[in-house]
Image (cartoon, rainbow, N blue to C red):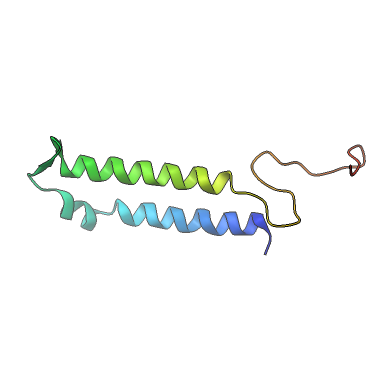
Length: 85
C-alpha cells in the first residue's frame, strides 16, 4: 500500500469520525444548561471537535512519505527533465 492510498483511507475515516461526532444523538448529550469555564458545554464540544478534525486533517496532509518513496503534499513526479541526484 502506497502513501496515497493510506492518506485516502485516513481521510475517509476522518470524515466518518467528523460526521458521527456532530450527529444529533451526540449533540443531544452535550446540549445541557451547564457551563465549563463560562462557555456552554455544547459550544465547547463543537469547537473542540472542530479543532481536533482540523488538526487531524493537517497531520494527514503533511504526513511523511513511506520509506523509500517520495510523497507528501507538495511532491511532484520525477520526469525526464528532473534526473536522479
